[in-house]
Amino acid sequence: MFKIGEFSKLSRISIRMLRHYDEIGLLVPEETDPWTGYRRYAAAQLMTANRITALRGLGFSLAETAALLACWEDRTAMETRLLAQRAGLEFAAVLNGTTPASAFDVWPHVFLARDLDALARFLEGRTRPAV
Image (cartoon, rainbow, N blue to C red; front, top):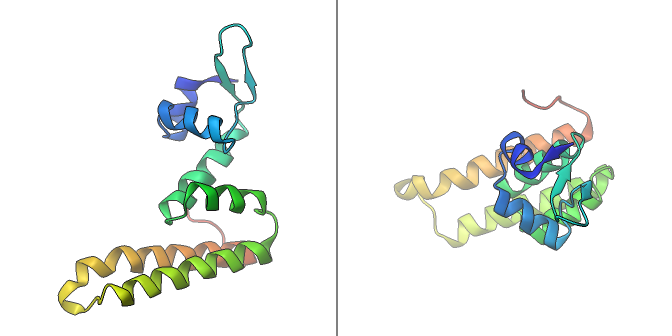
């Protein structure tokens, strides 16, 4: 078991965000001391923390991240949500009127779409995750 500070360093999620994730039920500590309120996380929760970080990095909101975590093992549901996110990003790029002159505005969308494609391929079992 890890104290919140240790888990924060390992997961690279701030203590403040870990407390927030606990409050909203996104990443609840394995145990909380009833007397002190100290939170302790299990090593297995690092995988969930990494998934949260990856999904947040792909542009998903906290509510969407919670929904994706709930259906993580359902490849069809995950692929559907990932494709919808990609379509939304592509639509946003079109709405922003991105052109070669504003290439710097396009790059975040290109990388997010690429990452979403890679995650979808991984969930389909076609590739292994990048190390």
